[in-house]
Length: 209
Picture (cartoon, rainbow, N blue to C red):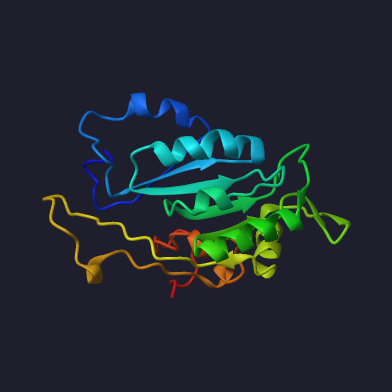
């Protein structure tokens, strides 16, 4: 399906990058242009296990998801490779959530800014610690809004996906999907990395801009 739909970007995320090579199709080569492959790195131990494997895998587009963010993570030595195009982080938000500390977020943000890699802090998590004070934030909506208001986001170097139509011909830039957002998207932590609204009309809201 991913090969046939070369006009669509597929976002893949795994905790098991060591299993990927044996699962790739025979005609994979150096990777397909429409696949964006990501690994999770919830703390430094997992980052040091998974990101080196990510850098060795044959994918055109690569990213790191630090979520749930349960321990400080530095990616600086991996970002210098130039292979990582996006880093996303967010706190834990289900029962028994472990705390997310704002200083972890700011450090990762600063590393991504220096490397000009897109960075998005998408949610604080249920238990958020900032300036020595612990906040209990109910609901993912409020967590996302608080993350957005922190200003911890950076739009890095453009990610260029060379998409093709059903016949294998490149899709002209003017025909590519354009992101649209509704009023309730204005303070969403995921806005920077979100595909926006498809205007399906199911929610009954006015069309997106």
